[in-house]
Length: 566
Image 1: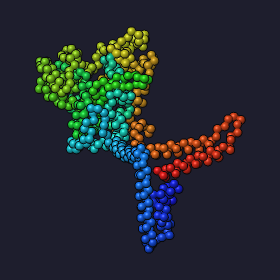
Image 2: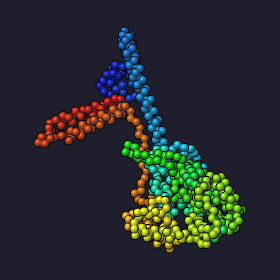
Image 3: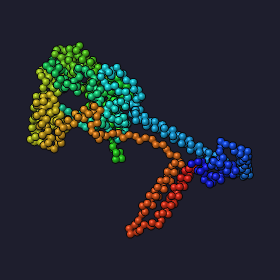
Image 4: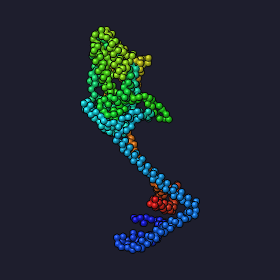
């Protein structure tokens, strides 16, 4: 459709007034094909008409100015009106340009967020743009080479959005990735455990199987190492003249976020991946707060290794490699044998005259130098013929469980089964939890004795209404979950996925908003007329519906005409 065909009658009148009737007729005749622009045409007439039209236009403008000059107030109003209109148009164009620029930046940021991680919270986001890793060091240790966050998320079998969700650190949050509870110790009492939730545990299993378990440990480390156990930790100290036990205070909390991040950097990973891996394997101390019907988790302190995460023992063993090397070298010079099971350090010597005081002093200095602290109340020096224990195992002649303690335990189980739990006590914690902890410990040292004790404790729990779970099925599920997580596979088909942020939307102009509003009103009116309201026993008035439809149609046509004009 041509430009003239779009003009309204009023616009045609205005164009004639701006030029002349003859000039407009001449333009229309050329447009309609009466005169071919490539052929000769009455140039003199056209030139004359054009000149006259120009003069008439100038005359009209002069007349309009004269009228304004005759009325200064009107002239000022017209000038103000013109300037205001121009300012409004300029303001609208500026706003449209700013909205388009803002939308372009938001869209670019949205696309960037879908491909990489640029922010993970205060205090931990520095260096996320650094993706340079030590390829030679990773290859020497047979560790997976990961280029960036996207590569890490793909290897884990999760989206980068979920990786950001698991790593993000907030001082106050409604989400907590760990479940905290107490667990019975082998000698009674309770140990606070921070068990990761399934989503976090899946990521930690992948880190454990694909990175941490491939790192070579020191031979003195026996805790949570494949092929080693509490029994292998005690065997080197059997039938020794002197046995020295030391314990490191607050072992896991001492291994903070910076040390874990430094560990991954030492393995060869870039600053970006080291930050993300450290955030996945550490947790902050949090306080649970209820406010306005919602539960909030407030971060109290810095991040550290959670006691209960599958990655924490492996990380602590790797960090303690230099500690184990220094302690073993020191022990050999003094004639001692050294082993470590988690935070329990054991030294033994066949010579009764060995210098124990020098051993203790040097050990304290080395432990302090490596960033740890010896528990002052858990240092024991055991000489023959007194009972010698290594992590609860008697090592005087052969590895065994303390006979007197085992006898008392069996007697207690018999009394509870006969007389009930009232007035009974074992250790410092809850009775049933303490009994279960000790039975599990005996099963580790002497399975033939421990299995019987575990069955007795299970029977007592059923007798007194404690809930029990079939451990075999739980173990199988855990094993399958761990295997799938290590391969980067989803544990279930309907596995939870973090919600992705919606793409940005370009802000509409005022004219677009007005047109949309008018169209919506018209659509609602049409919908209302299509379904007239009727009351019980009342016949709808069909005579009014066509009339309403007609006015709605007129309204829609008017909106379309205004949209074309502007």
